[in-house]
Image (tube, rainbow, N blue to C red; front, side, top):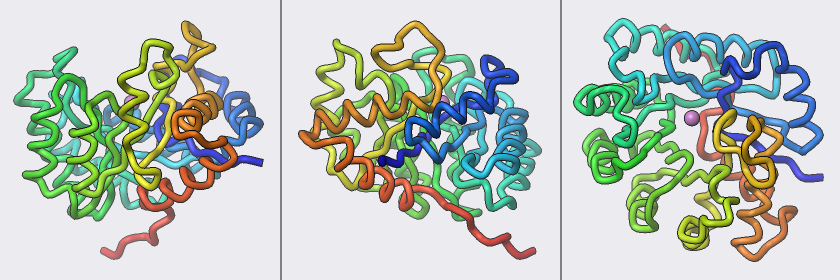
Length: 263
Ligand code: NI
């Protein structure tokens, strides 16, 4: 029996309205018995933590996505810090830079990203980093803000092996999602092949990025098994061999069940 964790799901997305119990049951059937639900703004972070308090298999990450970086005010950051008092919060995120969509001005994205890493260091939590078409600036901010003090993950990785190596040098894990299963993803497969086993994680980033053979349909945590199976194939091993390694990595990557902080 394999055990998998989906390290990046957006279960508070409106696409899941009212279906969460069935979605979690299907995840459990697929061996996915732990899921981190990821906030992308303040309301989704609050709601994600509410779900994590309700369902034992769910944990939360709280943060403001680069798309919404314009909403990263001092008050919003203090509200996020307040949520982190709960031991069900295992990371800060998602944060990062997205120069593909540029939904928020780049200066605002960079400042929000910096503030998230500062908050993570203040609270001793790892960070979950989104980076699209912004690889040089992502590495620059991670370095300048000393992410190595808390670590974290480059989620839905789409960069080069060189970028991954620089991030791993700062203590980050590299997480792969549905695109690894796409038939045209030879370059990404080559990158995954080059990453050491003890730095790898898997995720769905659901409801987005549905893996083969379900492309075109809504994604959900059960499908992380398909990403893990493809990663195992790339690594020349069985899913049964890879799953416990991914589990151990996730134990090291996130801040599980911390005690309530003092003061
Ligand atoms: Ni995401």
